[in-house]
Length: 354
Image 1: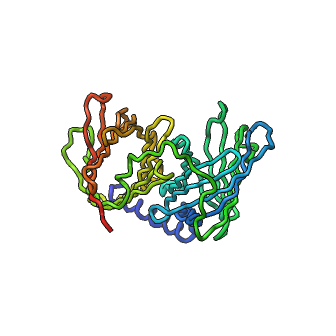
Image 2 (image 1 turned 120 degrees about the horizontal axis):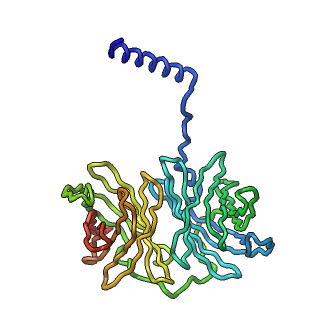
Image 3 (image 1 turned 90 degrees about the horizontal axis):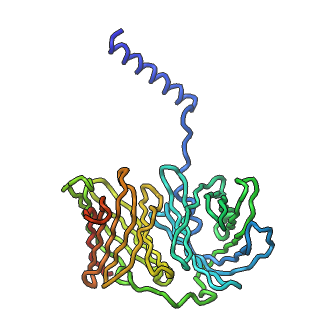
């Protein structure tokens, strides 16, 4: 039997198999596109929260908090930034959750931060089915490894319900410790308490607003490459927590297509440093570890250690104003623990005045 006969036989079998699958709808089930699952959240909400004081200790001591939640869309809805301010017997609380949709896994990640430390813990991962969202992660709580579950339920256009629960027995039993009911409001009420007045940094004040951006990206870092790709787009930077955090949303186009990127920057008042996190809509996962650093003489310098093509490297990110209406940021890699640096990403910004 010659090669042509074999190829024709394989082709015939392939066509026959595809015909059977089409006729009986056999094959991979269609995966639900959930990128707009959190559209119901956009807007402003009043929230009543019940918080268990001592989870996993048999406690029945709950405290009540009341506050305001605001949520806005990013990337046309397949990401969402939620901010919360609440007050209760334990004082004033500020937090945020960044929701990111991963188009490859068709799952969402919930990334939470408290303004008291400006760091982001493990993401809670999950999806929606039949109008209810379930999200899980594994964490350490008071030295114990536990599972955490978030459930979003009872969703209507003007109300929804959220519960967080812990499990210390591998998911056999769950103890709720955070229960919130939210009701939509038209106008944002004033916060019920006073946020912390100390440690309000102004490092990123120069970056607020809308910018035209030109990016140059090195095609193959750490290979002695001299081939760069050029991209052009626009970015918007907005404050969070009265300036103790901020977010930049970038849309840019180049030879490889469209890039949607966000940079989330959160201030840690204990360390007096900024934590920088990045994500793109094509992946929908918040990059970790954070790139950490601070400002000196008007320039921000941030570092972290990552793995690039199976090699442990150092990463440096710099951002600085040039004039009132222009600024620049640069990313560089070091394969030798900071002895030498290769710049691989240069962004030049010009303010758009509206």
